[in-house]
Amino acid sequence: MHIMFMTQCYAPEDVSFAVLITELATDLVKRGHQVTVVTCAPNYPFGRVYSGYRNRLYQVECLDGVRVVRTWSYISPHKTFWRRIFSYGSYSATTLYGSLLAGKPEVIVSFSPPLPLGLSAWPLSRLWHVPWVLTLMDLYPEAAVAAGVLRNQAAIAFFSSMERFLYQQATHISLISEGFRQNLFGKGVPSQKISVIPVWADPDIVQPLPKKNAFRDQHGLNGQFVVMYAGTLGYTSALKEVLEAAEILWDEPDVRFVIVGEGVKKAALEELTRNKGLGNILFLPFQPRQVFAEMLAAADVSLVTLNQSSSLTSLPSKIFNIMASARPVLAVTPSESEIAQLIKKAECGVIVPPEHPELLAEMILELKQQDKRLTKMGQNGRAQLETKFSRARCVEMCEQMLLSLCRK
Image (cartoon, rainbow, N blue to C red; front, side, top):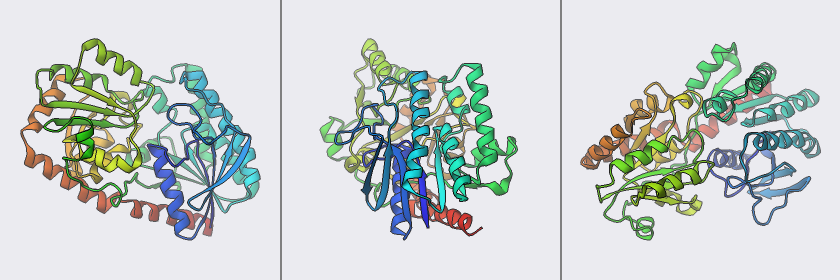
């Protein structure tokens, strides 16, 4: 089977959902399939083209058996609304000619966001008479509205109509959660058109490791109760209240907050930390993949945060790596969110409502005194990850979905 992926992020050092797409592509190649990825020059998260690459009209490389076709797109370190829209739009447009030059596959898989990418996948599926799978990693435009990125009512109406059109035209729609499925049911998408394939983590790569390790040594964390956030510092991350909780816990000398990642909110969070003189917060850049498991292991508890408005339209993938590392999850999220439901079922963490930093601070102090409870929650998360959210299981589900579409 020849599969064409269309995605804006694909590179060896990518983060977040891009890692999942890379793992999916390479695993499908190992299973005997031919995979072509049509993407742009790697630039996430800083909006600067990676060293060794150029933002060309068309270029081809091979990464771990995957044929990677890169086309030009507008790339900028400034993440203003219109620059972001132009970046999404330019890549979505050039993907059309990049895919044509790459040649006809047996099935097309486009990943959203960006939502407009579906407007390139749709005509290609009609031209080539091949099935097209629209894979939703977030629900757009709702996620952008909830995050406060999209406010213009005309733009919201435009992207909402685009969303409905793409749902109608796609051969099949792949979702990452049951909550997303319910959302699409409410928009009239028939159940037979939908598959739910969970986000995953690789339990062979992210393994439970000793808490006392080189990462703690390097960053002076020995003897500290480490509350860690590792991920994108974006509009939905709700980290301001984490900083407020850190301010409340300022007189607890052995509690340390470690925030690892990059994103549009990082500069503002760092400035707020400096202004408040919070020496109990450590900011670090994204860490290399080779130290990722060790970094997660250095935490006593790991944060997953979502603001109130984003809780039903996003599912942070970081929770699955936390579960793989056998560390408990401290979730700042509404009780009705997908993350909260997952934590309750797996008994792998605790939940604190957003916008209540005093409750978050109280929970951290409570957990600090409960070593056995922390260990048990971590073990529960690891067991659930191995059973339901492992890389091998989820890739198998995706492969079977694509094979069934190609047989029709």
